[in-house]
Length: 405
Image (cartoon, rainbow, N blue to C red):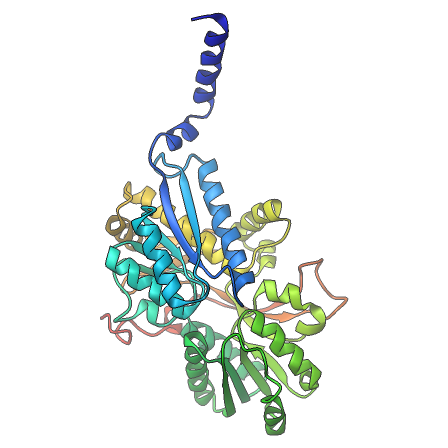
């Protein structure tokens, strides 16, 4: 061996000794996670937030040496907000790309199609979208986990707060698909128990952002609160039309969810005084240690704070890693069983836990209100936290009600 070859070999050996975890991760087949999400369509901004959150989790894990000595890879696939496409993309990454786990699904109706594929393939799936059916019979399975809030929890929590703080005469407008319908049903039940009245409810086609034909009827009914389930890009179009009709001056406006990408795009003139629920808001970094760590790392990489759906994605990937590490296995059944036996975790906002009977995650949520122009907390401080609603299993349907007891 000549001197140059000797030095090259020695340098490589020194590098190996200085980075043993990295080399171990590179020496085995990767831990591969498929991630279907709607990168195109009205939920594209929320999907981009999910992609950033999952990417951050992947990079954080790999910087620590991977999982069980394996590099972590997340494979993103555009489901186009279509159930058939979501099912096909999921099948492709399982059969062709040999992923061991699936995280993802932003739209309620698409995640159900994804879940059918993972059940057939016996692959653990962590859903990161709102849905009531995903953790109930006949749709759920021992390998189906639900990281996100669901419409029952969200609308029970937010609906009760609206009735107690904003008014009890409502008009409800909702996107006419699974998530919107589920929230509408729960809100109707909530306001009835609160002794209030639903003056009317208006479904509209998801992605069809024309509301002006409905607004005069709503104005004439004079509700105290206009409750909106207009997700993604629809939310901005809806609020612009509401504002043009002067409705913000005559009624309160609230919605089960606020989304940071839409708050930023719409701006404070549009979102001022609009109330909404959220599973995560970046200003929690001021009070919650894990949120502080997550927000700092996210902002360093992306030069912007994380949104709620990106945080779901981050947590979903991190839970796959935690389950594999504890189980010392990449087998879906072993990992699922381990997560049920070790249900408590905290990746970004405080304690969460899996309920054993339905693999449902329970977690705190918050009520936020859009800040007025001139009162923002920096560029991204578009909302302020006005209430915390602690995690409570009683907010959801029981496992018996879900057909699981």
